[in-house]
Length: 88
Image 1 (cartoon, rainbow, N blue to C red):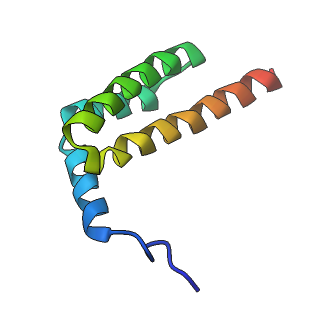
Image 2 (image 1 turned 90 degrees about the vertical axis):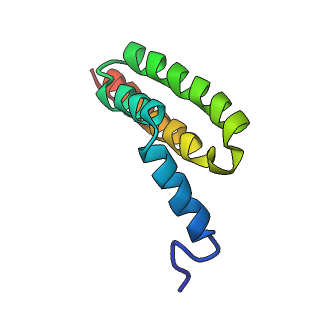
Image 3 (image 1 turned 45 degrees about the vertical axis):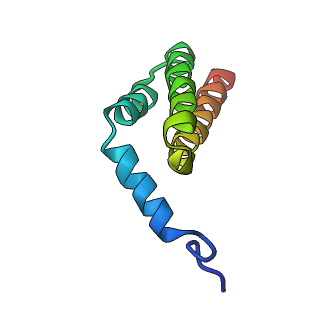
């Protein structure tokens, strides 16, 4: 059975996670996504994440995957807002 870490560069991933969690900008973007109470607030938060994605792709491209993960997380939050809206 293949494990979740098989084939991944664990050292790179761990450095990316540490960099993200030590970055005020990353944590602020995460906070905006987590605290969004509406689709509109989430849209604003996702713009912050997009700006951060551009910055990290320029400044530290080897760890930009962490911001990409945050964007994917925001997509899941958006789906939950859409599902809530359709069930009203």
